[in-house]
Length: 348
Image (tube, rainbow, N blue to C red; front, top):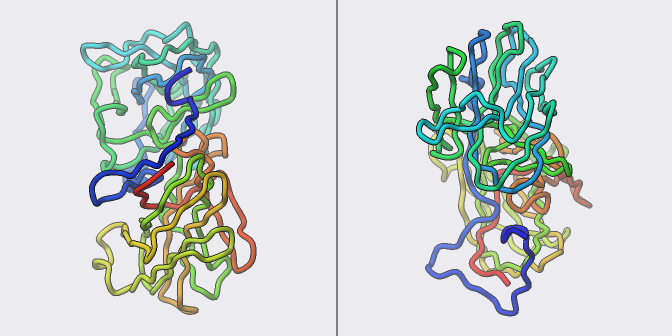
């Protein structure tokens, strides 16, 4: 069993050294690049590749992608290929005995899970490429990526205009993931989601008027504060920590404190008056609620996944997911996640 798949029961409490706590889940600050719309496929010789390391030995049987723009929809061939250890480029050779699959009709802003014609026998640690090209007729579309805030050395993306004779490495991170034949997904450390940064602006008079991340963690933690991301902050808001519907801590954010509008997304960090213990297996909610009943309003950031199975491949899985309410009980959605989390300094 891989170390990351094991479950540990700790007999003691571990406190992180230093004065700065860590955040859960991770705080990547991604934003879908709406101006770019994705990496282009426009001719029969165009190629887009997502290069990543296999994290688990098994049988890979499908690849998930999402077109960010489609002007002419034609079938896309999807293959897994080996990667040249010298250049870091796809070789054109199918990986692990696999054969390509075909996505017959790419649809804009839609998650597609494309089965391979023959699955790949994947070995943990192998560096491989998911390669996309038109099958027999050229169309025009783009495959969605996240912008340069998340540029990385591995995983990475590449494009080719000449059937893979030469490749250009890009700074973007793919909105993609990979399915094993047991039905589970692996992200390859990509981000297989839509980043919704234009949610309907909401006031305290609308429904829902309170949104949250539900935390149901496999370990006990102590939280000292929070972080939360917004597209716009145009009114005062209350950030609250609940156990169920019982308030534990709250924090008031003044709309006049953040930087000027038009400077990108806001990320707010705050600290609770009293650190709180969150017990493993119980439901807690980190919520955001606007305080005014009229505009100006508030815009949240939310990650939207194809399904709960895809979110389950992300750190902490569906244990951290979207919730909303207008008073009363929370409504939970295990295929979405708010851009926000807890600061913790202790776990057990």
